Image 1: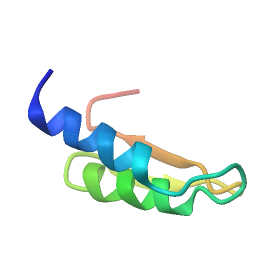
Image 2: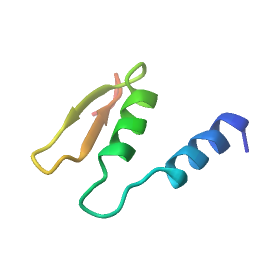
Image 3: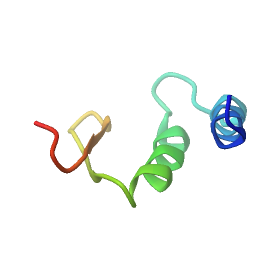
Image 4: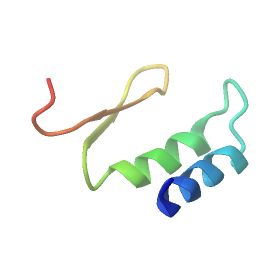
Length: 55
């Protein structure tokens, strides 16, 4: 497994993200994806990432 993948997994598993309070996890994922995907959120706070060319 690549070191970057391990670092992401470590960051996600060590972050606070109990049900109903996942904003820290969403922030981590938003930071990782913002350069490669269009990011939005729904009314429940779920993170939605769309990559160019994906339908």
